Image (cartoon, rainbow, N blue to C red; front, side, top):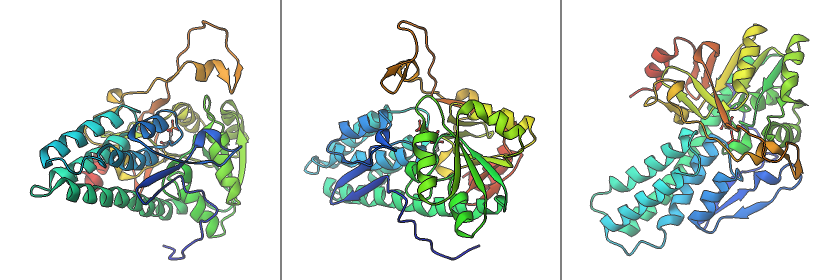
Length: 355
Ligand code: MRU
């Protein structure tokens, strides 16, 4: 494994926490404008998650952890019990912002349990511990993404084409991304490969975010629309697909951005491996299979408008599921911070990550 420390200064820091203030890049404005937005309240953080100003499973977990601090920062003169009540209420509220990515509820639960375990402490002491925990969650994510990169980069070899869908990049995490981490580290090692980024309708995370951040870092990236993936694969331009995930069920079924299942089916047809890049915080052993994953349905206007332009008739019936579930049989492996996990997933995920 490479010990070389890279300079990732060209990668935008999606989230930062300084002097009690959370600052986010407003990802809805990319790639036209890089605007940093200071968050002033828990309601604003909720809204930023809901509107996808901050998005991507690990990033919304980190934003949730910091957001929780806004909910209780003025409550440090309360009794321990009253402070805990406010904390739980704030966590429940933030958890309603988006349902599919388990990282949000994972981070909120982790934060609440830190305070619950401080049996003899004052509210002020609990607040200080919570702030430390949120920063730890953020820092851990940096290390996890790096290890995903180190474990996954061996899959990318000279001359290969790699397809990715949506944005599981630095913008969706603390630094290197999950699906993009193997790409960044392979690139740093001098491997010459091409990335094809699906544009990812309806909100274009692939076009607006992935192709933007890979281009910035000097990786050879080509943007395609979602319906071009089959053609590009048929021309033998793709050797493997790497995507991120929002929730992995105990049996390996994986929720990720809508369209991922289509990529998986195509990959199977063309006999290409599909890898899911996955921090352990995205594995949900309490969810048995993909059937039990709640899929977020979003505003129909995301489908009937393309930017400001109406592209569907008024009053048309619309479905807008934000995620789909790729059955585990279509997945070659999970690239995690602890190595690549191969089938049988139910047994092997449990062996590596289960309690
Ligand atoms: O709706 P989004 O943009 O939050 O969806 C994001 C994805 O589907 C990502 O692939 C996933 O969260 C992994 S991010 C490392």
